[in-house]
Length: 626
Ligand SMILES: Nc1ncnc2c1ncn2[C@@H]1O[C@H](COP(=O)(O)OP(=O)(O)OP(=O)(O)O)[C@@H](O)[C@H]1O
Image (cartoon, rainbow, N blue to C red; front, side):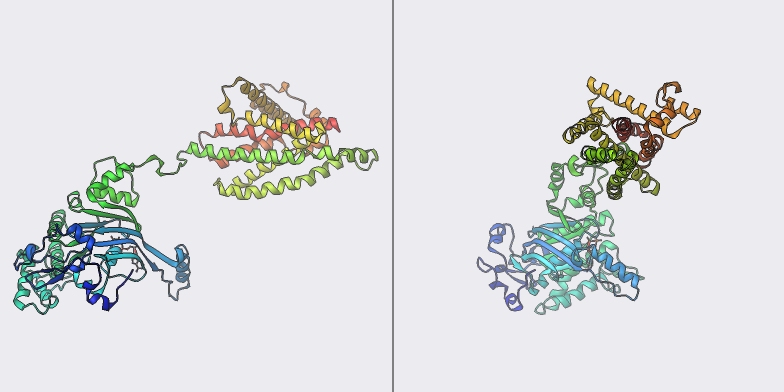
């Protein structure tokens, strides 16, 4: 904030552009130089301000204050966060950590507050507790300078100590002597604070006028009280405090929570007193916490602050209209002040807010599940395609070496297969593991060790079986170009019909048929792998057949014949039953238990077991090809 040097301010008349010189004088001998006012302001307001030069005894006529037009622009205030100076190391660490969250070790209390107020107006600073009302009031009253940014001007002049006696500041806690009566308090203040050129009698008269104007006659001989001393009521004490300040005829009156602790009638009466003072041309700024609707409408302007930010500045009566134009409409009849405070604190239970205020959030459990299934589907597809395309070129490239070396009887086919698969598998295990370690926690899946490893295990299975599928396509086509194309086509086909997108495409007959084919194929392959590799007993087999919808075990394939046919490769295939369990655990564990879990299982299962199908076909084909 700018400040004017002492020399400059002693003669205020020299500072601003002026329109001439005029004296406003009261009976108490106060002389105000009209040059203090800016040209612009005088142009607008001179007709409105009734300048009395006669000597009279009524406050309304004699004490015309020097009108102050207060303007504040982009006021910012921050305080340095104190690092705890303590012997307690825990406290020191906590303080340091807490301070890291604040930008530059500063706490920003006011963040760009702008406004202005004319003489004769009451500006109410509203906002929840801790929003910065008192801080702003202190800045406007010239009681806070350090770390203040922005400009505050009084009739276009920055604050200077000469303004001190033009500014009355009524603090939240009334600092009055409890042993003195109301009259003694005011007379005491009048004797000390009024200029020495005033006679003693004039000072007494001044105190008397204030008592009358503030309606303190009934309690004039009552002690102020406080603590253990019984005294005047809260409202009377507050009025005595205000009287203490307006004795010296301030042009700018600042009040911090003048109505706190008062009942609504006393608060209303106090506001009437302030209105009377404003009518005399004083500029009044008051912080107020929760005014009644009657009081709210007594303010010309309000400035609503939330966490140091200005939320609304303007005419009080237009505030509701403004917020309703933005889409904030109370759903029940509400006191406007209450409505504004609810907005400032973010309590919008009874307030309709614009639809686009919040980013879309998943509110229902179902939506959360759908989003997670989407991610899991992506994970399946990503590792399926990445592994397939990573392996599809293996056979076409290696075939000629393999054939040559096999002819030379250098190694057995099984050795080639084991070594080739194991070497390639390293990448298909390491990358998905890294991937899942990051994505699992970022996506907010269930944070249990069991669920994590089940998910990781399922992903690895997908990657490994897809690797086999890639090799299958390569071995089947034996052409790098065609292998890639075939892999893409098959992958796309199963992608579309796998169950995730099929909802959208359900109406298409072709898709329905494909989906059915896929599911039937999937079920049969599951069954084959279950029976071939796990050698279940009869009961298990029956159950498996029923589970896969085949009704009877005799439709299945002989376990032994299947195993023999697939030979060595069968041992490297992940048992279908295990995959089935892992897949289900993955879904139940990560998508959370819910009534939709059956649906989720079905949909995701379709995608998850795609590689199983491919791997099983690969086993058949590769043994034939090689
Ligand atoms: N010197 C300071 N050091 C640290 N924090 C401060 C300082 N002065 C003010 N604050 C903080 O700034 C915020 C605003 O304080 P302020 O007293 O202006 O709020 P208020 O809106 O008047 O609250 P209330 O209605 O409860 O009086 C509070 O969180 C307060 O703790």
